[in-house]
Length: 198
Picture (cartoon, helix red, strand yellow):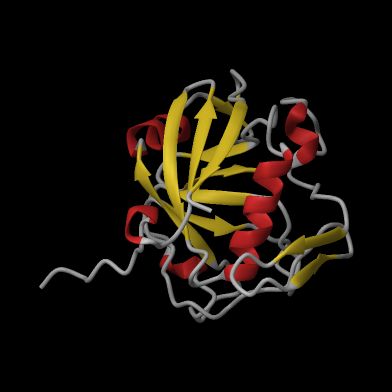
């Protein structure tokens, strides 16, 4: 029996979507505001502020994942790529209407509440390995990486906050580009991320 799809698309009065426009093509994802509202609201806030525009993918590994969202990666060859986050501040929780905080280098609270696995096509929060260290960086799984689930026995704890709904071929193509130390040799730029359904 096939797994039941728990997604709630905006057409059914459910979750918002994000359209990613990159230098290699476009893809779209559902953002799980219903399941991980702090993580989703932070991501949506950063998208709406233009934070991600002009940032490059700084780590891509075929058969694993594509990582993105470090402000230092506006320079695609920056040695600091992968170490940055958003500014400290506040943002609105789009589910509760409350105010949430980014602190200590733009970090948000770990939201280990929804048992969505790091399956191929999912968006997942990157972090330093320490608790409450996620900020603006995230990765898109191109394989089933359940060892990264926050509820798995390993050290890695990465909550899933969305899933690709169109353009997975673009995501896979990005993962297979020529790299040097996992950084694309030909930079892959995020031109814009547009949020719909909110």
